Length: 261
Length: 153
Image 1 (cartoon, rainbow over the protein chains, first blue to last red):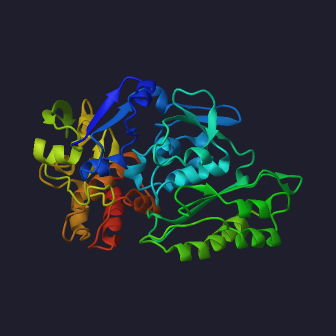
Image 2 (tube, chains in turn brown, orange; image 1 turned 60 degrees about the horizontal axis):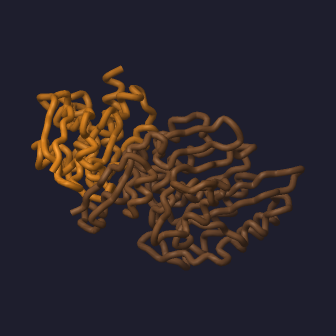
Image 3 (cartoon, rainbow over the protein chains, first blue to last red; image 1 turned 45 degrees about the vertical axis):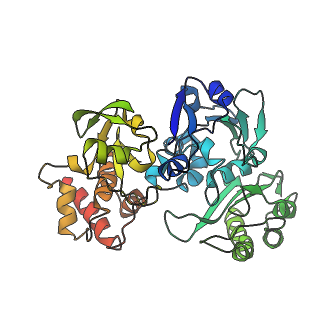
């Protein structure tokens, strides 16, 4: 039996040391199966569901749902990845913070956050850490209060692709997010992130190196595609084998980049 | 156990929920509304779809205590005779075979038509994308929802 305890503040939830119950789309499966720990904690703190952001970055509370993001016209750059999470019912419940630690094959929204250069504000700590670092702590996930997400200066500089066998709702063969800002015709600050290509969403160093500093032309795209899976160790599951994911990662990256060129 | 007071299909209700009990189990065993179905218990199939404060929810993934003070709607509340326009359209278009997904499909469709009375075919597909049907191949369900929307307009 699992007790889901609601604490007054996020700070108290952090101090409790118990796993945090966000939207519940992942924890309730374990609760239903009798596999959840005896105690989960959460908080009704309204700050967790705040969205603030007029300037270059938007601050999204960790408890904001995918549906809340889809309801905001000013967050249209996040609509494609938010729509890629679950079905409509799941999006009414699944949170931005929970997605960071959703186990494979879930966590596609975090892939977009990593490519955008988002940072996670941890509960009870000053400052913010890059999302790609925070998502590595799978064993004892830190308690995230909010995400600071830089808005892409040019909407066309951000690309998103989720590859799934069942449409419109299916789990990932893989997902890809690319931030490719241009300065005077050259790419500066390229970030490429993959989902379902490792134990957690991660950046693709090979593809980033191939693109950085050059033009987004056929030769650069071919180089990025060839190095897409460099250093990545994708899992084998019912959807695809590790071999298959490694083989098609470059193909899908090429298609995404061609659409952004 | 904790008391949960809420509104079910417009009528005030109160029942006790166990620790960790989900809303689906609470509605079926605690309250006696058998219209939401238990399919997977994992949020994959949508058979337990209910509407909570106007939003579709998977009752199996929602703690029962979270219904406190809220408006819960299930397929049992669509129409006392089972002749809601959506139900009529599902019959007309043979949109149910075994019928197990039907209450969830009806609630997903109801939520769609409440916020978008004239949906496109793509919007209907998106709205029921969280609900599995292993009998019909979905086409009769899509046709039924589109025709119910037309009839209402």
